[in-house]
Each structure stands twice: as C-alpha cells, then as structure tokens.
Amino acid sequence: SSSSSSSSSTTPSSSSCSASPLPLCRTLSSKQLQSFSNRKEILLGEIIENRRLTAADHSQDVRHIVFDFANDRRRRQQQKGGGGGRYDDLEDVSHPAVAAISFEPGDVLDVYPQNHRGGVLKALEQLGLDPNDMISIAVNEEAPRFLRDFSAEGLSSTLPSLISAIDLFTIYLDVFGTPGRYFFEVLAHFASDEMQKEKLEEFVSAEGQLDLYVYNQREKRTYLEVLQDFKSAELPLSYLISHIPRIKARQFSIASSCLKYPNQAHICMAVVSYKTPFKRQKEGICSSWLASLDPKEGKEEGTKFLVPVSFSKGSFRMPADLTKPVIMVGPGTGIAPFMSMCQQRQQHLLLHSKTRRNGVGSCDKEKGDAAGRGSSSNNIYVFFGNRYRKKDFLYEKEWNQMCGAHNRDDDGDDDGNKSQKKEVEVEEEEEQRTISGFYAAFSRDTEKKVYVQHKLAEQKEIIWEVLGKRQGHFMLAGNAQKMPNDVRNQVREIVRVMGKMTEKEAKLFMLRLDSKRRYVQETWA
Image (cartoon, rainbow, N blue to C red; front, side, top):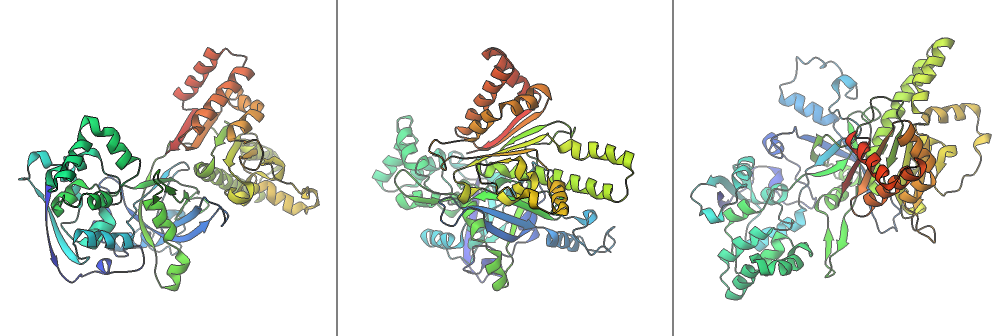
C-alpha cells in the first residue's frame, strides 16, 4: 500500500531540522528513537572515543569506537518520572546495579546509521524539496494495487506522522542504498521519455537481467543516482516514501566486556571505501558516518555525538564448563568478539586473584588456583591474521598483556628482557595472562603469503588436542569470502592426519562438531 504525503514550507520547531555542518541530527524524540525498531529497546550511545587502529599510511582504515551509555540510563530514568527507584541513591552509574546495559561476550551491537547531511541536502535539491518542508505521512488504501509495496504499510506505521524533509531523508529513508528490480518497474510506469521507458522495461524483463545487474548491482547505484539517470520518471513523493526502504541497522561484534567497561560497548570497525568496476568511488553509509564523528572535535564545539543502537544475541557463547579449551580464529576485524570473550575471562581471573590475596588459606589456595588460573591455562588459543605487523596488528598491546611474550607467536621480535623484570612486575603480568597462545599471520610481511590456516597447520598438535581429545570448541569470525572454507578445510585435514582417519571419517567428525555447536562461525560479506 502506498503512503500519501503532502509538504509545505514551514519553520521547523526543533533543532533536528536546521542545517548543520555536522553529519548528525542531534535532537531525536522518544517516539523517533523507538520507531527504529518495534521489537528492541533503542538506546542512545555517546561516542567518547574514535581511535584509528591501523597506521595512517595504511590503505585500510580500522577504528576502535567506544559507546558510553551512562547518560542514557539517566535519560530513561527521567522519562519514567525519576524518584522511587530502587537505586536512585546510587550516584556511581558504573555500579553493576545501575548499569545502563548488559550483554554477553559474543553479542552484537546494532547501529542505526544516518545519511550524511551534505548528501541529503543535495538529494533534497534534486527532488525539489526544501529541508524545512513538513511532510504528513499516512497509508493510502486507494493506491493502484500494482503499484503497492507490500511492506509499505509496516513502513508507514513506523514513520512519524509528521516529519521534516531533512529528518525523513537523514534518519529514515535509505536513499543511498541500491534499489531492487521492483523499483525499476515502478519507474517505468512514470517515465514520460519513450527511450527511458523502453530501457526501464528492458531492465525488468527476463532478457534484461544481466544488463540490470551490470548497471545497478555491480555498480552499487543508489536510488538517487537511478532517479538522476531517468529524470523523466518523476515519482510522486508518496511513492518514494513507499518504495525506498528504511535504513537498516548495521551489526558489529562487540569488542569489549561489560565487566571491564561498565556502561560501555566497544566495536572494531573497518571503514568501507572502494571503487566499482567503472572506477566510481563508494563509501559505506554507516562506517563512513561513524568515522566522521570525532568526540574531540565535538567537545571543542560543545557537541555530544549520540547514536541510536540496540543489542542482539550473537552466534558465539563461551562454554559453560570453563575447563573446556577454545580455539578462536579471527582475521582482521573478526578478532572483535574474541577480544570481548578474553576480556571477560581476564576480569574473572583478576577477581579470583584478588579474592585469593585477601586471605585464602594454603589448602584453599591450591583449590582456588585450580579453579581459577587452572581453568584458563592451556585452554584459550587465539589466531589472528592481517597484512602487515607494523600497520594493522589490531590490539597488539592488549594481546601482549593477555598472553605474555612467552606465549606469543606473531613473527615479531622478542627482546628477551622478561628475566630482567622485577618480581612484582612478573606477578602482575601473570595475573593479566588470560590466553595460552597467540598466533598471528601477516600475509604481506613474508615472500610467501601466510594466512591463519597456515598458522593452524603449524599448531596441529594443539588443534587435535583441543578438538579430538579434550572435547573443546572452535570459533571462527571474519570475512565470508575464501577464508572460512580455507580454515575449515585445514582443520579437517588436521583432524584426518592427527586422528588417523579416512577422508570420510574426518568429514563426519566435522559434522559432529557442527551439530554439537563445537565448531561455530560468524562471517559477513
């Protein structure tokens, strides 16, 4: 069903409608926030850190972004009226009892991005709309059936009934997304130029699918670019609202533990930037937007960058039995969920060490060591991969702290000065030690390219010990292209050789791992 829209130039009543050089609508009402999702609680995360992890001269820009939710807790408390709450007298919002958020290692942060303000202003100019036009939205039951978008009724029901043009195109409509085939069918109906109409009809025909793919999907054309190329197809605003989908949330694996960082969620994000086959520059809507939100610049201008987010359950869960070993394979930003898990385990171990120092007897001390340190020793092995050790070794310092130099194999230089450390420093390092082995592959640092699967092959004894003898778990995260298959094939080969199995027996072994969720992967395109 179609949405009917009308617009008139009026003076906006909120600052979210005003023109601004900053790429963020700062004023979002409670209704606008909840309209992002009917099923999840929407929170406002303040970006308090936006740090580049890769070298400045490296082609890949990877960011560590920190969202803080302490102020969102206060905001929600105020909306509920405040007072009378069980923890109203607690001023420390980092206290677990009043924490704004709670998630498990392996969970996902859903970020609801916004279109960049500069691009939106150009889009509005192209469509003949003033940024301050107020648009009324309602479902039109009388629209011709063949022009109805069957998701439009749900779309309209989650849009505000009255909204400014700048907010509609910045917060809600995915005008910089790539249209589907049906959008070209709608355009063909409205095209007045015969040649353009003929081309659009060809695109939606069975014979024209290859041409449509080359023009549209492969080149990542946006709705606005298509409208620009077929100017004679003047879609009414009501049809634009009906047939351009909502901006979808982008999901990022959380790279932090809420035990270590209460009221915060960290993500590890690669900024998407690439050229199409026709050499047209493209940027990721969400990643480029988040990368532009620098809290240091915002502080200078007295601005806080508040981003709508929600939390989702991820694919990974650490085994309930802490004595079960785990292999974690995370090339590139795939390392993020494993950073969260290892930080969580680190906090548990530090708490155990603190309890032990505060007066555990000698007999109990031995039991405590077995339950605490023993649960982590020889049971977490991390495999990381990227291109250059000096340019994109993500979280190098953190991994060094969690595994100690003697447990690290990253093709780097070990200065061998550990023996010269003071005894107290060595003890502190042991308390920080969370993982039993860290193995890194940097594919462009050697003449022959080395990837994570090659590091797995080098550690075949550990892989078989974990999977074949100790009923351990294998977790894999990262790019969904060749890497997942290469890793799985390598693991299957290790199982075949070390377990003295036939090819068929090794395949069945891998399938049993899958069925018991002892081999889990979370990949993305």
